[in-house]
Image 1 (cartoon, rainbow, N blue to C red):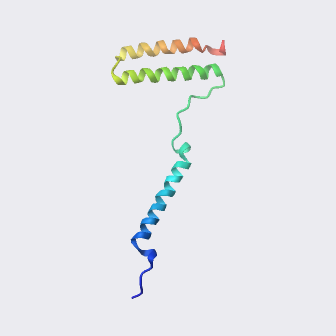
Image 2 (image 1 turned 180 degrees about the vertical axis):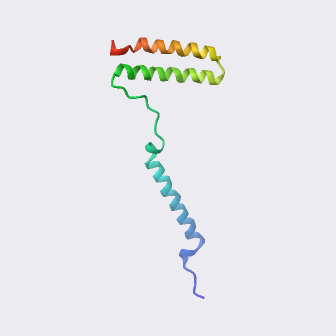
Image 3 (image 1 turned 120 degrees about the vertical axis):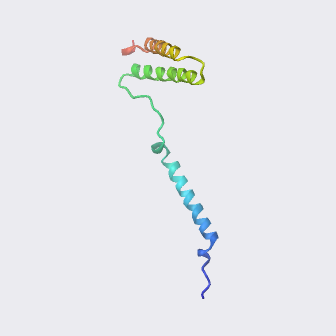
Length: 97
């Protein structure tokens, strides 16, 4: 029986598997923006509307965090969100005025 090639051994298979993992990791890293898109604020033709949406999203995230932490009740959450919406609307009125 002929001697087996060193490429058929356990070491070669470990190296091949490590190369496979490295290639897969590189592909995930390379395509990270397409695979894991960042949450973006809705694009709007009106800059004032975009600023309003960004302000509202930030405030709502804070309120949702307080609700998740149990700091506020559901009724307070609704009240705070309505006030945050009004504040952001007053800071960023339609038409930029």
